[in-house]
Amino acid sequence: MSEETGKATEDKIFEAARDVFHEQGYGGARMQEIADRAGINKALLHYYYRSKDKLFEAVFHVSAMRVVPQIVGVLTAEMPLREKIERFVHTYIDQIVANPHVPGFILQELRRNPNRLRQFVGELARDKFAGIAQDIEEAVARGEIRPIEAPHLLANILGLCVFPFIARPMLQTVVGFDDAAYDAFLEARKQEVTAFILNALEP
Image 1 (tube, rainbow, N blue to C red):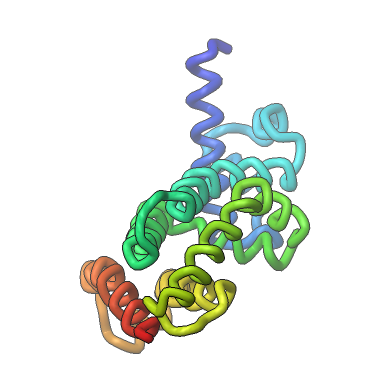
Image 2 (image 1 turned 60 degrees about the vertical axis):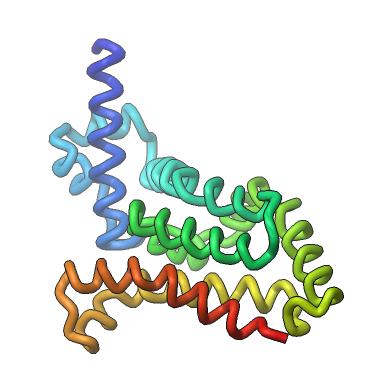
């Protein structure tokens, strides 16, 4: 098997596994179905990935690495806090729009293997939160924003950003949006969430 052919096969496996894990979760996913969707036999699938756990770990890591570093990188950017909050919201929503399967993967991993997720996030963001926390404390001290603890602010931002992705089927049904309308709604969330957070921080 040539290197080019091997890479193409691995890409097919990744895409098939990503779709199956996203649709059915780790527990419902079957290696045979992943092989079928990739257009290969199960023996070849096991040649690339010895077990379902190894395959899930690989797919999760690649998927998360497409999103998390870009989001975490905003936290260390040199800019005023309000601008940083706006950049964080826009980057977060843009990255999830481009990789909509990632929130599902993260929720699965939180339920199934929280220690692995804790280690993964810690490696990427361990020193980043201290910086944004200091930015918040200094902005409070200067009277630029109302007193708020950094964990609460971060939880508020993440919750407002990620919930419309996790709850998309429910929200689409409730508000009556088709896919195009909901995509437009997600785009509008960047401005809405930013304005909501900044208004809530007024001293």
